[in-house]
Image 1 (tube, rainbow, N blue to C red):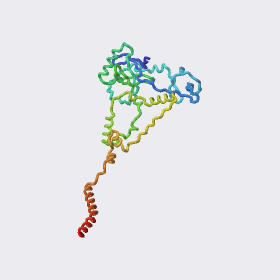
Image 2: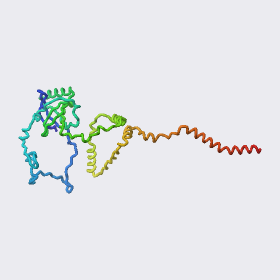
Image 3: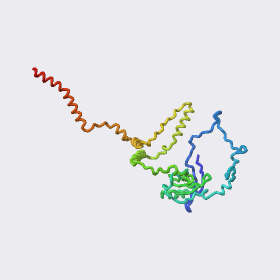
Image 4: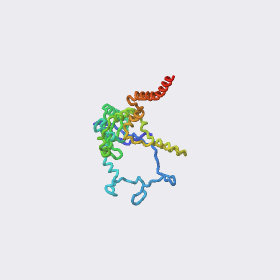
Length: 306
Protein backbone atom coordinates (compact mmCIF):
# COMPACT_ATOMS: atom_id res chain seq x y z
CA UNK A 1 0.00 0.00 0.00
CA UNK A 2 1.34 3.44 -0.96
CA UNK A 3 2.54 5.53 1.96
CA UNK A 4 0.47 8.62 2.72
CA UNK A 5 2.16 11.98 3.27
CA UNK A 6 1.81 13.65 6.66
CA UNK A 7 2.36 17.13 5.18
CA UNK A 8 2.09 18.74 1.76
CA UNK A 9 3.37 22.12 0.71
CA UNK A 10 6.27 23.86 -1.01
CA UNK A 11 10.02 23.77 -0.56
CA UNK A 12 11.32 27.29 -1.09
CA UNK A 13 14.84 28.66 -1.56
CA UNK A 14 14.66 32.42 -2.16
CA UNK A 15 12.38 32.75 -5.23
CA UNK A 16 12.71 29.09 -6.28
CA UNK A 17 9.90 26.74 -5.17
CA UNK A 18 8.72 23.21 -5.83
CA UNK A 19 5.83 21.16 -4.41
CA UNK A 20 6.94 18.53 -1.89
CA UNK A 21 5.41 16.10 0.57
CA UNK A 22 6.71 14.69 3.87
CA UNK A 23 6.59 10.97 4.58
CA UNK A 24 7.41 9.30 7.89
CA UNK A 25 10.76 7.52 7.70
CA UNK A 26 10.14 5.24 10.68
CA UNK A 27 7.51 2.54 11.01
CA UNK A 28 6.39 0.48 13.97
CA UNK A 29 4.18 -2.03 12.18
CA UNK A 30 6.49 -4.92 13.09
CA UNK A 31 6.63 -4.13 16.80
CA UNK A 32 4.96 -6.41 19.32
CA UNK A 33 1.70 -5.04 20.67
CA UNK A 34 -0.13 -6.15 23.79
CA UNK A 35 -3.69 -5.57 24.96
CA UNK A 36 -5.01 -5.12 28.48
CA UNK A 37 -6.90 -8.30 29.47
CA UNK A 38 -9.27 -9.19 32.28
CA UNK A 39 -7.45 -12.21 33.82
CA UNK A 40 -10.72 -13.67 35.16
CA UNK A 41 -12.41 -13.94 31.75
CA UNK A 42 -9.53 -13.63 29.29
CA UNK A 43 -11.42 -10.85 27.50
CA UNK A 44 -10.07 -7.49 26.39
CA UNK A 45 -11.12 -4.54 28.47
CA UNK A 46 -13.03 -1.64 26.94
CA UNK A 47 -12.03 1.94 27.60
CA UNK A 48 -15.14 4.07 28.01
CA UNK A 49 -15.10 7.80 27.23
CA UNK A 50 -17.27 9.59 29.75
CA UNK A 51 -17.75 12.95 31.44
CA UNK A 52 -15.43 13.22 34.43
CA UNK A 53 -18.17 14.79 36.59
CA UNK A 54 -21.51 13.39 35.39
CA UNK A 55 -20.06 10.04 34.18
CA UNK A 56 -22.22 10.36 31.07
CA UNK A 57 -20.88 8.14 28.24
CA UNK A 58 -19.67 10.17 25.25
CA UNK A 59 -18.60 9.55 21.66
CA UNK A 60 -15.09 10.74 20.78
CA UNK A 61 -16.34 12.39 17.57
CA UNK A 62 -18.44 14.77 19.70
CA UNK A 63 -15.48 15.99 21.75
CA UNK A 64 -13.57 19.27 21.36
CA UNK A 65 -10.16 20.45 22.57
CA UNK A 66 -9.72 22.66 25.60
CA UNK A 67 -6.86 24.58 27.22
CA UNK A 68 -6.70 24.47 31.05
CA UNK A 69 -5.93 28.09 31.99
CA UNK A 70 -6.49 27.40 35.70
CA UNK A 71 -7.38 24.36 37.80
CA UNK A 72 -10.46 22.62 36.33
CA UNK A 73 -11.24 25.62 34.10
CA UNK A 74 -10.92 25.13 30.32
CA UNK A 75 -10.95 27.40 27.32
CA UNK A 76 -12.69 25.65 24.40
CA UNK A 77 -10.69 25.77 21.16
CA UNK A 78 -12.45 25.39 17.79
CA UNK A 79 -11.07 24.43 14.38
CA UNK A 80 -11.30 28.11 13.40
CA UNK A 81 -9.05 29.03 16.33
CA UNK A 82 -6.37 26.57 15.21
CA UNK A 83 -6.71 27.72 11.59
CA UNK A 84 -6.16 31.35 12.62
CA UNK A 85 -2.85 30.34 14.23
CA UNK A 86 -1.38 29.08 10.94
CA UNK A 87 2.09 30.37 10.11
CA UNK A 88 4.14 30.24 6.91
CA UNK A 89 5.59 26.81 7.76
CA UNK A 90 2.09 25.36 7.70
CA UNK A 91 2.32 25.24 3.91
CA UNK A 92 5.86 26.38 3.04
CA UNK A 93 9.21 24.85 3.92
CA UNK A 94 11.41 27.91 3.46
CA UNK A 95 15.18 27.46 3.70
CA UNK A 96 16.48 30.04 6.18
CA UNK A 97 20.22 29.31 6.07
CA UNK A 98 22.85 26.66 5.43
CA UNK A 99 25.21 25.29 8.10
CA UNK A 100 27.83 22.56 8.52
CA UNK A 101 26.28 19.31 9.77
CA UNK A 102 29.05 18.93 12.39
CA UNK A 103 27.79 22.04 14.19
CA UNK A 104 24.53 20.31 15.15
CA UNK A 105 24.84 18.32 18.38
CA UNK A 106 23.31 14.83 17.77
CA UNK A 107 21.34 15.41 20.98
CA UNK A 108 19.09 17.80 19.05
CA UNK A 109 18.06 15.34 16.32
CA UNK A 110 14.55 13.93 16.76
CA UNK A 111 12.37 12.28 14.08
CA UNK A 112 13.15 11.77 10.39
CA UNK A 113 10.98 12.35 7.32
CA UNK A 114 11.49 11.74 3.62
CA UNK A 115 11.05 14.88 1.52
CA UNK A 116 9.81 13.84 -1.93
CA UNK A 117 8.43 15.72 -4.95
CA UNK A 118 4.65 16.07 -4.83
CA UNK A 119 3.71 15.31 -8.40
CA UNK A 120 5.64 15.54 -11.65
CA UNK A 121 5.43 19.30 -12.13
CA UNK A 122 8.33 20.27 -9.86
CA UNK A 123 10.68 17.28 -10.15
CA UNK A 124 13.28 19.18 -12.16
CA UNK A 125 13.37 22.03 -9.63
CA UNK A 126 13.58 19.50 -6.81
CA UNK A 127 16.55 17.79 -8.47
CA UNK A 128 18.39 21.11 -8.89
CA UNK A 129 17.88 22.03 -5.21
CA UNK A 130 18.99 18.58 -4.07
CA UNK A 131 22.17 18.70 -6.17
CA UNK A 132 22.93 22.24 -4.99
CA UNK A 133 22.68 21.24 -1.33
CA UNK A 134 24.70 18.08 -2.00
CA UNK A 135 27.50 19.99 -3.75
CA UNK A 136 28.02 22.30 -0.79
CA UNK A 137 28.18 19.48 1.75
CA UNK A 138 26.06 21.61 4.04
CA UNK A 139 22.67 21.21 5.74
CA UNK A 140 19.67 23.41 4.98
CA UNK A 141 17.77 24.73 7.99
CA UNK A 142 14.04 25.23 7.55
CA UNK A 143 10.75 24.90 9.45
CA UNK A 144 7.57 22.89 9.05
CA UNK A 145 4.37 22.66 11.07
CA UNK A 146 3.35 19.06 11.82
CA UNK A 147 1.30 17.58 14.64
CA UNK A 148 0.12 20.97 15.86
CA UNK A 149 3.65 22.28 16.39
CA UNK A 150 6.19 24.14 14.27
CA UNK A 151 9.44 22.20 14.12
CA UNK A 152 12.86 23.28 12.92
CA UNK A 153 14.30 20.78 10.45
CA UNK A 154 17.72 19.92 9.06
CA UNK A 155 17.32 19.14 5.37
CA UNK A 156 20.03 17.04 3.69
CA UNK A 157 20.48 14.87 0.58
CA UNK A 158 19.84 11.14 0.82
CA UNK A 159 20.32 8.73 -2.08
CA UNK A 160 18.39 10.34 -4.96
CA UNK A 161 16.18 12.43 -2.72
CA UNK A 162 16.26 14.39 0.54
CA UNK A 163 15.53 13.70 4.19
CA UNK A 164 14.44 16.12 6.92
CA UNK A 165 15.40 15.60 10.55
CA UNK A 166 13.30 17.52 13.05
CA UNK A 167 15.36 19.28 15.69
CA UNK A 168 14.59 19.59 19.39
CA UNK A 169 14.44 23.04 20.91
CA UNK A 170 16.66 24.10 23.79
CA UNK A 171 13.66 23.76 26.11
CA UNK A 172 13.26 20.10 25.08
CA UNK A 173 16.74 19.14 26.31
CA UNK A 174 17.42 18.36 29.97
CA UNK A 175 20.41 20.11 31.51
CA UNK A 176 23.34 17.68 31.80
CA UNK A 177 25.55 19.89 33.99
CA UNK A 178 24.25 18.57 37.35
CA UNK A 179 24.97 15.02 36.18
CA UNK A 180 28.47 15.64 34.81
CA UNK A 181 29.63 18.31 37.25
CA UNK A 182 33.27 17.84 38.28
CA UNK A 183 33.90 14.87 35.98
CA UNK A 184 36.17 16.91 33.70
CA UNK A 185 38.48 17.60 36.67
CA UNK A 186 39.24 13.93 37.38
CA UNK A 187 42.90 13.13 36.68
CA UNK A 188 43.37 10.03 34.57
CA UNK A 189 46.39 7.78 34.14
CA UNK A 190 47.85 8.30 30.62
CA UNK A 191 48.82 4.61 30.49
CA UNK A 192 45.21 3.59 31.16
CA UNK A 193 43.98 5.97 28.46
CA UNK A 194 46.51 4.45 26.05
CA UNK A 195 45.28 0.93 26.81
CA UNK A 196 41.64 1.99 26.49
CA UNK A 197 42.44 3.63 23.14
CA UNK A 198 44.04 0.39 21.92
CA UNK A 199 40.88 -1.47 22.97
CA UNK A 200 38.73 1.03 21.05
CA UNK A 201 40.92 0.67 17.95
CA UNK A 202 40.66 -3.13 18.17
CA UNK A 203 36.84 -3.01 18.27
CA UNK A 204 36.43 -0.37 15.56
CA UNK A 205 34.48 -1.52 12.50
CA UNK A 206 31.86 -0.51 9.93
CA UNK A 207 28.29 0.33 10.90
CA UNK A 208 25.81 -2.45 10.12
CA UNK A 209 22.01 -1.96 10.51
CA UNK A 210 21.95 -5.37 12.20
CA UNK A 211 23.97 -3.84 15.05
CA UNK A 212 20.86 -2.02 16.29
CA UNK A 213 18.32 -4.84 16.06
CA UNK A 214 16.09 -5.25 19.12
CA UNK A 215 17.35 -8.48 20.69
CA UNK A 216 14.90 -8.21 23.58
CA UNK A 217 11.92 -8.23 21.20
CA UNK A 218 13.38 -11.20 19.30
CA UNK A 219 13.76 -13.08 22.58
CA UNK A 220 10.22 -12.10 23.61
CA UNK A 221 8.88 -13.50 20.33
CA UNK A 222 10.60 -16.80 21.13
CA UNK A 223 8.90 -16.81 24.54
CA UNK A 224 5.50 -16.17 22.90
CA UNK A 225 6.00 -18.91 20.30
CA UNK A 226 7.07 -21.40 22.96
CA UNK A 227 4.08 -20.53 25.15
CA UNK A 228 1.67 -20.95 22.22
CA UNK A 229 3.10 -24.43 21.68
CA UNK A 230 2.77 -25.23 25.37
CA UNK A 231 6.51 -25.33 25.81
CA UNK A 232 8.61 -23.57 28.35
CA UNK A 233 11.71 -21.57 27.70
CA UNK A 234 14.66 -21.21 30.02
CA UNK A 235 15.49 -17.63 30.93
CA UNK A 236 18.98 -16.51 30.07
CA UNK A 237 20.81 -15.77 33.31
CA UNK A 238 23.41 -13.13 32.72
CA UNK A 239 26.16 -12.63 35.24
CA UNK A 240 26.16 -9.11 36.56
CA UNK A 241 29.40 -7.34 35.62
CA UNK A 242 31.67 -6.89 38.59
CA UNK A 243 33.09 -3.48 39.30
CA UNK A 244 36.67 -3.18 38.12
CA UNK A 245 37.27 0.37 39.25
CA UNK A 246 39.95 -0.65 41.77
CA UNK A 247 41.88 -2.84 39.33
CA UNK A 248 41.12 -0.93 36.13
CA UNK A 249 44.64 -1.35 34.71
CA UNK A 250 44.43 -5.14 35.10
CA UNK A 251 40.98 -5.21 33.48
CA UNK A 252 42.23 -3.18 30.51
CA UNK A 253 45.23 -5.45 30.03
CA UNK A 254 43.05 -8.56 30.18
CA UNK A 255 40.65 -7.02 27.65
CA UNK A 256 43.60 -6.60 25.29
CA UNK A 257 44.76 -10.16 25.92
CA UNK A 258 47.79 -9.05 27.89
CA UNK A 259 48.93 -10.68 31.13
CA UNK A 260 48.55 -8.40 34.15
CA UNK A 261 51.80 -7.51 35.91
CA UNK A 262 50.71 -9.21 39.17
CA UNK A 263 50.17 -12.55 37.40
CA UNK A 264 53.55 -12.26 35.67
CA UNK A 265 55.24 -11.92 39.07
CA UNK A 266 53.38 -14.97 40.43
CA UNK A 267 54.43 -17.18 37.51
CA UNK A 268 58.08 -16.04 37.53
CA UNK A 269 60.38 -18.77 39.09
CA UNK A 270 62.08 -17.84 42.36
CA UNK A 271 65.64 -16.71 41.63
CA UNK A 272 68.54 -18.00 43.77
CA UNK A 273 70.60 -15.52 45.69
CA UNK A 274 73.80 -14.44 43.96
CA UNK A 275 76.75 -16.67 44.94
CA UNK A 276 74.58 -19.25 46.73
CA UNK A 277 75.54 -22.16 44.38
CA UNK A 278 79.33 -22.08 45.18
CA UNK A 279 78.63 -21.84 48.90
CA UNK A 280 76.26 -24.82 48.77
CA UNK A 281 78.87 -26.89 46.84
CA UNK A 282 81.62 -26.07 49.37
CA UNK A 283 79.33 -26.98 52.24
CA UNK A 284 78.52 -30.35 50.66
CA UNK A 285 82.23 -31.02 50.16
CA UNK A 286 83.01 -30.32 53.86
CA UNK A 287 80.27 -32.68 54.97
CA UNK A 288 81.62 -35.46 52.70
CA UNK A 289 85.13 -34.95 54.10
CA UNK A 290 83.85 -35.16 57.69
CA UNK A 291 82.04 -38.40 56.91
CA UNK A 292 85.12 -39.96 55.23
CA UNK A 293 87.67 -38.88 57.95
CA UNK A 294 87.00 -41.82 60.43
CA UNK A 295 87.23 -44.31 57.58
CA UNK A 296 90.62 -42.97 56.47
CA UNK A 297 92.00 -43.11 60.07
CA UNK A 298 90.98 -46.76 60.44
CA UNK A 299 92.70 -47.65 57.19
CA UNK A 300 96.00 -46.09 58.39
CA UNK A 301 95.93 -48.13 61.64
CA UNK A 302 95.42 -51.35 59.69
CA UNK A 303 98.45 -50.64 57.50
CA UNK A 304 100.70 -49.99 60.58
CA UNK A 305 99.72 -53.34 62.20
CA UNK A 306 100.49 -55.13 58.98
